[in-house]
Image (cartoon, rainbow, N blue to C red; front, side):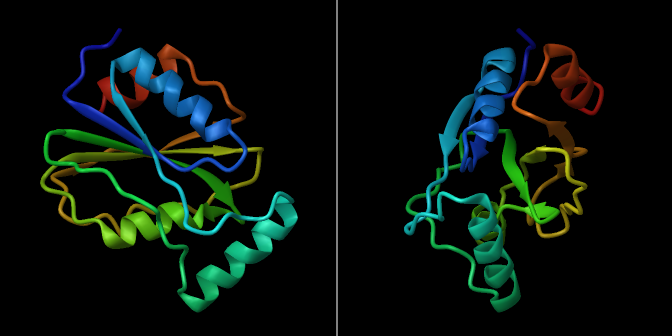
Length: 154
């Protein structure tokens, strides 16, 4: 296991791929994990979910979150999101919009089924360091990938 600062992994996962990656990273580095949930569920069909997400981004009406974690005891926050229509899933976009980080290191990891992503960290507020984004295809991450992502960049 990699020695890591007090780390919290926050993620949203509609199908379970991002959840699987979050748990794998947590096991590799010994981090705590928090799953974000939305007040209203997304459609089961991914195509319908994509349509909802497009409308949410266009209208600026991102989904309401049920609960968010307390960040004060963590030095590093890793945020996991599926890629929807080439962007962060709207629940993660909402979380980033609402959250002011308190000097923590912040990193994103994104899971995709192969589509290109236009994911930005510009909306992250209050951090001392933004780590490079880790892009993954599928639902598996290796210790080597996590090492390359976190260890060399910290």
